[in-house]
Image (spheres, rainbow, N blue to C red):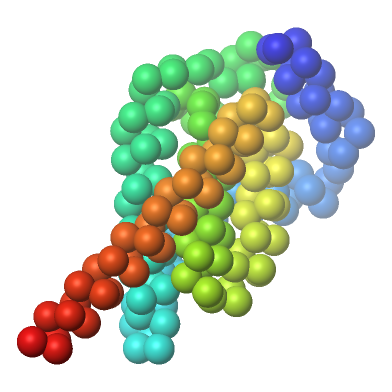
Length: 180
């Protein structure tokens, strides 16, 4: 399996690597180093009264992602990163020091997409475009295996929908309290 995944990463390096992407993709990846872009979006939505519950959904999704991805799965799986296996590759970014599986950038990004989608927000479409570029950047930068990115998408989808369902449950409970 590792050989096939290295082949995919090496193909990206051999056929897609160019000056433009070398400049743009590290910056795009950086916007989600700690989920910053999605945290900022959640904060904006929380401040906007009409979108407050969407912001709550996104916030819950990001918290669930943090717990599932960074506190449970990464330490549990402990997968080595591809640049540590193929040391000949030139990294365009500082090498991450945590475990590789799943991709935290991808998981947070797709948690945002699915929280927005499950909340009925049209913002899920531009979020999907950005999340896809962020996920690809992790492969391009040689810091994640393809299955790390796929795992991040799955984890993100699960916690995104869970975050939206949790927010909806909290909203309904708050409405019932107000009616009393």
